[in-house]
Image (cartoon, rainbow, N blue to C red; front, top):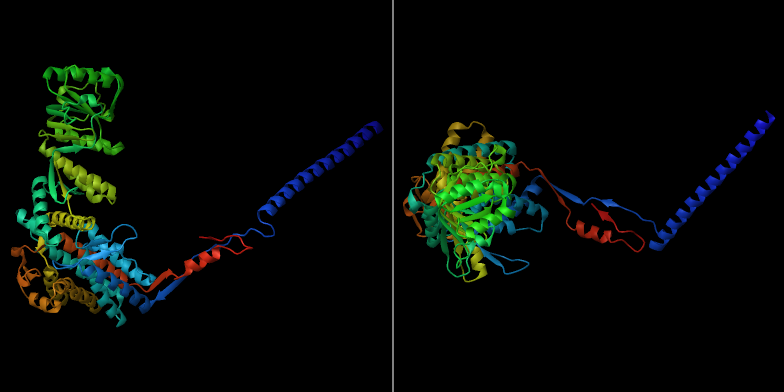
Length: 605
């Protein structure tokens, strides 16, 4: 026992000694690391300690009438700048740019987007009107100046009522009721477009009374139809020309230049050709031999549209083409992923082909000649392919167009809107390209914007009909609104909301007269209590039947102006405070963020 106890005591002592050695070693490592960090810190920032300060931007708040008056001042500045462009005798506005030449334009939404005011509260008001112009432009593509003026007048009269003690919430209810009633009345008064003369008149008025633009838009729409697409491009010459492209364009060229049939033009040209449409990648010869043999017996050309053709399959097609055994060409399917399938289905409907889709269990190996489509003429270049086909089933085509239009109505994406409109145009078989020419770059930009407005106004007119222009429609609607207010609305403050809409509706007609050099109030008095078709023609300075003289507006444009202006006015009148960044706060904090000699830089978030 004594021997055992001695042994245990020896082991305990040894363990304690070992533990002390380990602790000592660890302390040495920690000390060494601390010393290194201290030296590193000493080298990087001797005698100072690193700090990180987080700051929020300084804000200020404007309340009640102060906030509303300042916002109204910003609204007036923007509306005054935009208003000078209204009407056939409206003027241009010069936009100074930090690079390039100044822009000289007559387009309301472009002017509104360029305006930024130095005072933050005034700028907030200007941004609201900018939103009105943008919304009107998105909905109808035109009428942005009218919408801005309407919003300004609604807000001006509305603020007067609010300052006098009216309840802004009830005023907004009155504005909303008036807007709903006016839109319903406008739909009743609108007349459908009849023939190219109406289209020409709408386009010319929207382009600033440019008869040449009216003729071009009218001619283009006659050729491509209501579902067609009118594209606007810059011309390399001084002249403005129009090109109408027949058939369905696919933005894919031939896979191999060996398919070329016209060496002079470097194009593939087929007539009365078969069209094979599939979503598969073809690389093996066995996939295409059966269908090639069937086509060869018919002695007709063949166009293959598929994901890709490569390897020995491509070599087989090229060899047969070079030897004169078979007239054949191949292009890759347009677009990508799900859009590719949709495009291929469109092409199949136009050509009367069956779409050989893998997910439907259809394959190239088992394809028969009955599953092929037919194209009257095919022209393929290095970058695109144009199909002219007459074999489409009309019922299937109309069903497909209705489906795409429904998708177009439901989408919020600008990209999807462009792609779906493009598909509608391709299915309809019509694309017109207007190439705008001018002597200078400045004139070209202005002319392009005018043509764009004319195009948008024309499609809006075809969609929802036409009404008398020159602001006359709004003046006549104000008379109808006044009668309805007295008969149907009981709440006195809601009546005030309707009353301010009644007063505001005369503003566009007044501004058109003022821009023509006449007294607006006098002109409006001449229009009131006249038949709905009568209005003021600023070009001739006559009160006449505007439907006969061709001064027309699209009903859709007038509707979008009303809805956008009433929406923003209601929001503005119910505003009680504006929170904005304190002027000069950024500059002072940036200076503080630089740090002194003994401080670390400050991060601002």
